[in-house]
Length: 347
Length: 236
Ligand SMILES: Nc1ncnc2c1ncn2[C@@H]1O[C@H](COP(=O)(O)OP(=O)(O)OP(=O)(O)O)[C@@H](O)[C@H]1O
Ligand SMILES: [Mg+2]
Image (cartoon, rainbow over all chains, first blue to last red):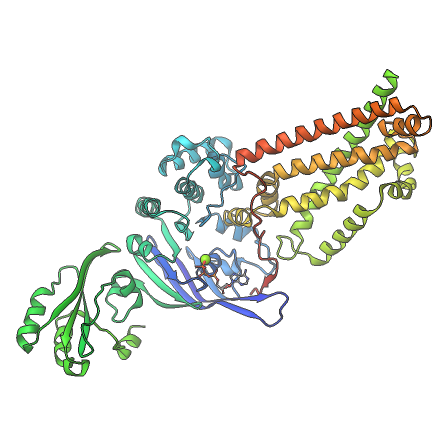
């Protein structure tokens, strides 16, 4: 649904000649139709630049953006202003913002009607559609209120209703929940999830909170310094040894009890069970295994379990037992032991 | 005395009313253009921006009395005369256009760039952004700017009185200054004080009630408009 290839964005400071910031450095992103795709990364990683390049609010320095089969970069033209074709394409892509960006001079309903005014819809059509959307986001009773009279969560609901007014197939969300408290964040994420399911909406969202990815994303990408360093469906990520995203999505705690120990994270998905494997391991190799931490959780709709165990002796002494665990089809991450080959193979 | 004063009041209101109208009609688009053509603006045109900005600056800082004299030929070409209240409207309006334009520019710059971006993301063009975002969102400030302009024009119109435009300024000079009829002069001062207070009050009231609706206690936080003004970006 959304594909970027070789997307590059270089900001050039106007006065200090030569000082350039490479915000995006050849980003290849592929968002499938109907999925919720999360891009996560630290501040300054280039997340906002990426999402703003998708609807060309920011002109990419190089690379292409395709949304719903349409090459937007080709529509952009030469000048800095958006031509008619690009503007039409934008009207089919909804966008929600961290700070809501509602017009304070308009009522809630008039805010939702704004995209429809731009599309040239009649007054009757506009108000019918706006009221329908406000009902969808649970704010039917606030139609005549002004944004200043709403809470942050309500404002974001209006922002979402407004983004949906043009019946978009794609919704872009730049930190839509970052200005909200945890409770409100949950309800807004739930709303996005529902809209994704009910309307078949493809959602590309930017966040710096792992919880957002965990609760609603089907796929995720990790950005660092303008590049995507990991990406895939949540299932794929969790099955990728050494995946930082997987570790962050699903952390287990526990410190080694001594220096002469090997700590291993065992990850299993769905039906797989570790219990017999661990006792088997213990029996077969006659070693004492201590469990440092364990958790079972639902990530992106998948049941995932992770266990951190400790084996006596250094890594070199435990190569055989670890090999045994791998043979059982479990995903094994040895702490402090970079699985170099595997990691490169996964990329 | 009564008809003299009421005629003078009427003349002042007539001059100020028309010149305010012309100043708003001319200064609003000019002020908006100053923002749009600025670096990083939607219609970025640095050369045009600099030229217009300079013309506005010079015209704005020109002493009104000199502007009035300098514009005499122009005034005669338009109104057929250089004396009287119609003739005074020409220099008043021309002096007020750049004055108002700068106030508009400041007001429009206060509009949150995020709103512009939101409308761009909906597929809105520049004209839509001006009509639906920049003007309505800065309306409280625009009203305050209009009030300031009216009050300034009342001051200028008194000077126009010296070239026979009539009005309250004319009375103050002819009776207060030349004939020492101080009573008449004080009445004029009182009338002016009341008129200015009323206009200021009405303007403040309108601006404040709009502000309150928008949920702002004062002008909103200064956020960058459109794009960071210090940066331009490479495009494909
Ligand atoms: N308009 C601009 N002009 C110049 N540099 C910019 C501009 N916008 C962003 N940058 C720079 O590009 C880099 C990436 O910024 P971006 O806003 O995309 O990061 P981000 O991942 O969204 O960060 P955050 O989580 O803080 O929002 C940063 O170094 C930033 O300073
Ligand atoms: Mg950002």
